[in-house]
Image 1 (cartoon, rainbow, N blue to C red):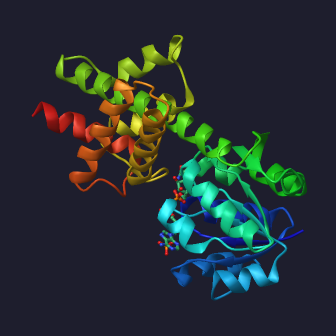
Image 2: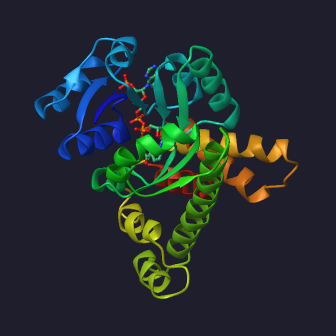
Length: 278
Ligand code: NAP
C-alpha cells in the first residue's frame, strides 16, 4: 500500500517510520523539509509540497500541530487527518475535501511518542466508512485498536474529551507531588504508594520519576495539551457542561506556557504549580 504522510513532528515521524518498517511505500512532506531526511534514509520518497504528495498517493495521512495548520493543508483524494483538532475544524476539512470530490476520515489518536513508535496508538476515526475500511491495514500498523465513531466530528470530540481528562489528571498529580515535597514527604515514595493502589496508571508511572527530577523531554508538547484543553472547554461551552476542574487545569497549562515551557513535555505543568507556591 502506498501512502503519503504530511507532518513529521514528534508523532508524524514515528508513525511514518512505522509504516515504512512495515513494508508500506511512504511519500513524505514536512513544512521544514530537512525533517524528511531521516525518513528518506529509511526508504521514503519526499515531495516539496503537500499537493505533490496528494497527486502521487491515493491515500494521504496528515499529522499537524493544530486547527490552523490542519486547515492550511487540507486537500486530497483519500485524506486521513490524524491531527487533534476541534469538530468544527474537522467539518471544514471534510467540506474542503469532499467539495473537490475527495473522501475524508478524521483519525485523531490517543497515545504519545512511545506508543506511536511501537504501533500502539488508539485511533478514534470517523467520516467516510469506505475510506476507513480501506485504511485499516495502515491503522493496524499504527495502532492497537481503531474505533469507528460515525459522522465527522465525533472522532475529534472523543479525542478532546480523552485529553481533557488527561490534562486534569496531570494537574492533580502535579499538585500531589509538590504538596508531598513541601510537606516534608518523599515524592518518590508517593509514586510507589500510588502505583500500588487503585490509581495506578501508565501516565503516573511513566512521567512521575522524571517529574521528580524536574526533567521534561517532550513526548507530548505542553502547548498542544493546552490547545486540547482550550478546545475541550469550548466543547463544554457548546453543550453547557460545567467543567471547573478542566478550566482550572487549563489555567495551569496557560501559566506554564507563559513561563516559556510550551515546547517541553506537558508534565512540565508541575513547574507552574511550584511557581504558584513560591
Ligand atoms: P509537533 O512535534 O509539534 O509537530 C507538529 C507538526 O506540524 C510539524 O510537522 C510541523 O512542521 C507541522 N506544522 C505546524 N504548523 C504548521 C503549518 N502552519 N503548516 C504546516 N505544517 C505545520 O507535534 P506532535 O506532538 O507531533 O503532534 C502533532 C498532532 O498530534 C497535534 O495535533 C497533537 O495535539 C497531536 N497528538 C500529539 C501527541 C503527542 O504525544 N505528541 C499524542 C496524540 C496526539 P515543522 O516541522 O515545520 O514545524
